[in-house]
Length: 164
Image (cartoon, rainbow, N blue to C red; front, side, top):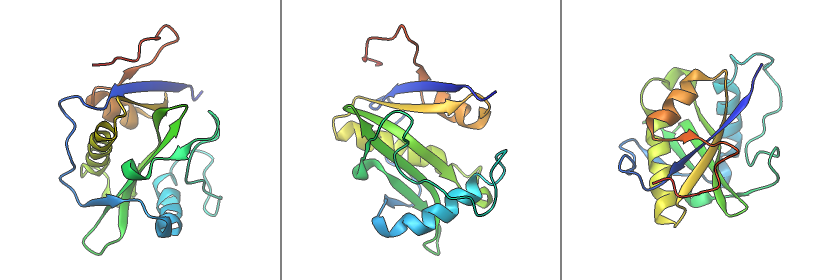
């Protein structure tokens, strides 16, 4: 069973800083390359088939959001090819990470962590005090990454949005 877990973090915690990897803002011209990257990144997921359509953008599960272009980023290699991506949207005034994925050939190089840290830094400078993400409970790598960046589980009892 894949149960979703919502995590939240303060964007201004001490571990956030601009990435030390080559990053740039996500651009509209990146969408075809991102769709291909997304397909590769999730090829090992149960039920994923080559050629399946890919959705890149705000998830529809929690209502529509609008992209936060200033905090949506891509990491790229020396040849300029995108190797990882972070897509952040805004829903009901809150920053939400919709996607964070890395090409399988570029995993374990700190790209996702670098994008996450840089994105959180940008969100903080944009005045967004917190960011949320939903992770499936069967994704221990993603859970470990977010917990290492001071995310914590959001429960039904959480009504306070001050996570400092």
